[in-house]
Image (cartoon, rainbow, N blue to C red; front, side):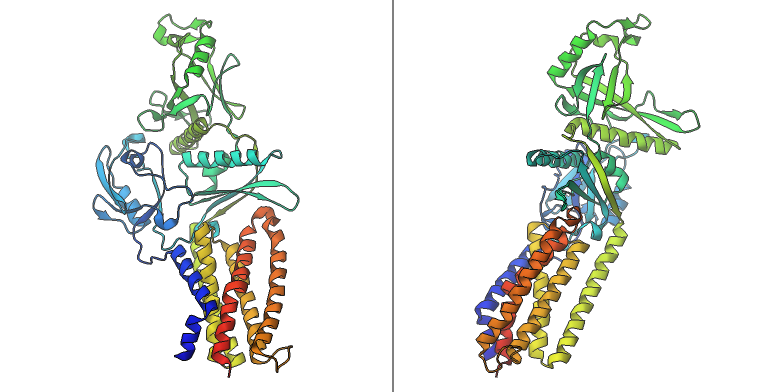
Length: 531
């Protein structure tokens, strides 16, 4: 009991205990957490109208709202959620119970008189605040490079615009960060969990410059001239007048339409450009059109040409209809393609164009199933490594007073690293796991140095005091520490920053070890094994 009291009251151990408690608070493990976590809420959806809000950007996983039941039926996981959501009927009101309250959602009418999605993107309820990287949960990573070098302010604006564009598109669980390489090239890394490459590649790589012209004169542009874009089923979707049909070659084509509202300035510009145009048609103003169409351009490419009704001549109207098309080998493919094109165009109209064109350098798509295998394999290998180290240390020193503290120190370093990752919102991916392994392995080496110096004297004088031996051990450890940090710094920028997780985790790991866990280990070994 005397030695236990010495360990508990030792200042180095007290510091370690404090950091471990803070790490566990940051991780916030709740193994029994139930329901599905709301990752994002689509604008103008049933969920949005009911008052369910998007998670705040950068919010911790455990603070996010969770769906617990739909219409009284318990929801424990994603399978339960989609099973209940698939049974919803058109124009009916349902109750959705979350951990923050009870909501009433009224389903909306979609294509073919079906129920549209409730507007929620969900994932299984998290058990901790530790965010898994793309490698471990599946999704898409796109590495982009600006067409030209841009300033820090321009880069910040570009990244903010991209986040807004992805959020409007219905993707809020997004990581957009600046990256670089040793040659000074600029990159942007975009990681989006739970989506496939086709959904986001064009959306984030295209500049998204939208322009509508009459007689080669600009009427309005996406973003600054648009006050409202309809995205509900009542005023957007497949055009009921044109619908879908076969085209030459047997493929299908479908037209979409949606309403937008212009600023008064843009409406006045339209009135000025149409007041001198000729009216063409049958004489009936309802079936007549102006001599010049409204031509729509996206990224300087014409995407559609719309006739302007004769009744709009010289009229400053703020409400107009936008249309376009999609194609596919089957009718279903054509409908899906048209709706995807419509969704992208709506997003560009809301957010405006990016300040610079981006080129896609690399795209990685990871399956969620593969990510789950990575997690289970990593946990299994980590457990085996701890057991193997414990066995080797026990055989080497034949003292539980050495092997047990080393194993506890290893586990403490992992907890500290995971706590820091949870606190700063850093994603744990395969590179970060490799960094943890390096940090823990370096820690074991240092603990062996400490043990040899305290038990046997190492290269220092065997007759010297414990204090002198520990000083010599920590001299070796500090030299190794600075070597590791210097070696890791270039990796922050190598590989366009994709190795940053490995470098940061390694640096944090060895820093925690040198200044917190290894001094505590040295104190414990001194108390337990000294004669």
